[in-house]
Length: 456
Ligand code: BES
Ligand code: ZN
Image (cartoon, rainbow, N blue to C red; front, side):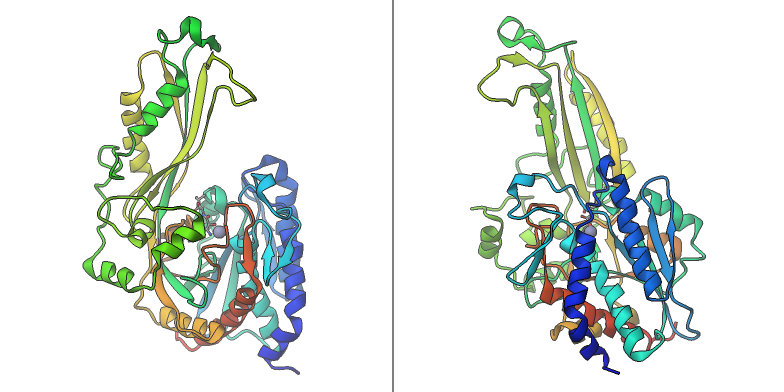
């Protein structure tokens, strides 16, 4: 019988092929045309868990199904809940991909496909480590519960319902998620903070139909003008958000944390060239890492209205709209933000314009304790998998369910990210390094061993 590292080497290319199989399923949760694919992706995972001998089930929800699988309890050892998501973000703009988003392609040691890093590649590391453990060492040294959902990228609302209803079944000592990033190449990280989010759509309308801008312009409020005026009032030139009360619950960065961020090897010039900009922007008085990890933001994601075809058209359009969100930091409540935003927008809405604000989804930010035996075990496991001690960082993205795990199950989450921030998650040419994929699998196997040394 090979030992575990030998097994991982022997099976490495099959693991890569299986990842590609899952990546071929276009499981875009936001796209209602992908409903069958969501079921296919859930079914793929369910079969994979069954093949490992885990008790697995596909759980129907009001939205996309989730997959739940567990191994037998191990008395005297901790129970670990592994969370991941099989849904992905929409792949457009399609013409900016070098190869098709759902036809995974391997180039320069990376696999390119929508979902490669976020989160199919990362979540499969934990499935593969279980396979390797069972094949080389026998029963798992602790109980694992896998909870893989299909709605993370649209706010995890149905998972929250399942979590509250099934909290007994999901009981555990700690949660493990690989859906974040390393600090940089060769610098693995454990993330202890995530931002939250409050996501909205605003629709404005004016005249009952499009008008000639020469005949009517100047006498009627143009909905696009109104929309851009309203949006420009949400943030000032120094990057401060103007919604009344917006900062009331923001927990300020401590001097210690600021010093820790400042001590990380962050190269602004390299960061600029990585994303193709000549200068950075953001809230005055904060460093780039502080702005990205621990300060709230406002961003427009899409804006529409009027004529966008070839040539010019002198139209005064009758409607316009925008999608936008605020990233939040711990203690800011997305519902409170929505409640403050609505009257503020109404106060900014000029006469002659009707507005409709849709609250799409929200999630609070999260901070997890660095002072737990689980955290120390995780650091050792990452070091064993990557050959490098991890640094502790916060990140700016959101994983909506993390705070709910703490509230409902009373447990902390270990955010062990194998991705890189230039993996282009959510953008064209998303990728995942196959070397990191395999380091992730090794770290995961080491994690089961390290966590099993802790008395629950
Ligand atoms: N994997 C990301 C979250 C993430 C990205 C954490 C980078 C840390 C660093 C996750 O899948 C994601 O993108 N979540 C959405 C959630 C939202 C749509 C509710 C996000 O952050 O935009
Ligand atoms: Zn993700």
